[in-house]
Image (cartoon, rainbow, N blue to C red; front, top):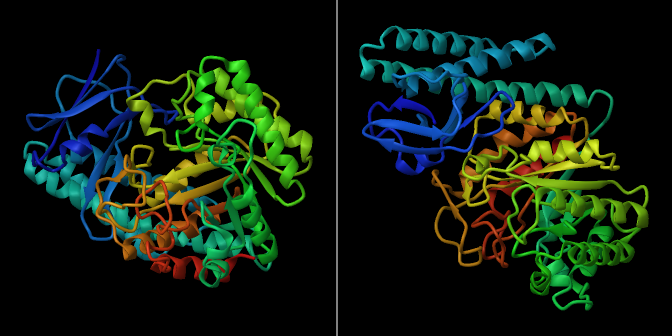
Length: 493
């Protein structure tokens, strides 16, 4: 059995909850199945194999702007003595900054002197930490300083990259055509907050929930989606419709469970529903979101190969009935932290690669990122790690779309799924707004990102993620709407 140990100084520097979320990953960025816990001042990770890897662990970064972020070490070999946790996180964080800075400078990024000065200070602090390993408290102090400097510099570097990359992209066009908007959820068209939503949007996701539309086998109710799509067309919004298939308890009709284990019957029922939806809305939809969350779903007794077949069928039916309209599939938790606690033959990026290599006419991939929630959420990460991971997914060679949810509160939400909660950070409306202001421009700067859409519109109606909407429980716009409006009006059609 593989074993890696990290000395935590001081011993209460991270919480048991954070320690349980730690995992190890290889060069392919895929998590290994591990068990992790705090034991007498050490973070201990056990796995079935003994290979070098990088530790990824939530860490409370000093400074009010960051809170808990998932930091990574460099690649480490197993050894008998424990590593010093904060020192190894400092090495990994500083080196990520150095490498990203060098990479962007080679493509012409003009880097402010402030960033290079902060990098020099971070390297100096790291050097002092590495030289003082006989004094653990002193090592921790210097390592923490290096981490904070590197994260601060990385945030500034990400903003610099975003500003200059967007400016370059706009040299040939007046405004970027990137889709920008929100998922309308279950909101009825007549209740949509048009005055605040439309200035921040050029597109919308209209969900086509199989469970709601075909609650009884063979009987379809299209009223809500009819009104939403008609409203979007009247307002001049691009329409992303779907997902047509989503393997979650909130999306599958109850009667389908009677056919669990009968794959060919499930396949036929899915084909019928997708066909009915596409026939009804063809000519009114700009993108078909054919399938979602298949990589993380554990409902029905479906193998990974059967999930692939269902996703492929949803694309083929949509293509046959509405040719020329782009087809998308989405993957939840694109960092795939869940693999550290649950083995799978298909990590999400491998799942996507298999679909692309199968010859399907897939137009793009949607990365669904619900930040700071559990279960089903993505751990908070640095701006540079976001950039790096988006670049990693772009290697598949198809356009990317990103859907996001970020909480505005950490208290219980009576309208949300009772099984989902926020983790690690304490959120508030201004923190949600600040996150959007820091991260969204960098995502939009990527030329392969064709859409950025908020995954939850309002907290006033039943929803999945606590306090994740753009509008609060009274239907009032949160501060984040101001930021989205400013971004859209500054850069987008």
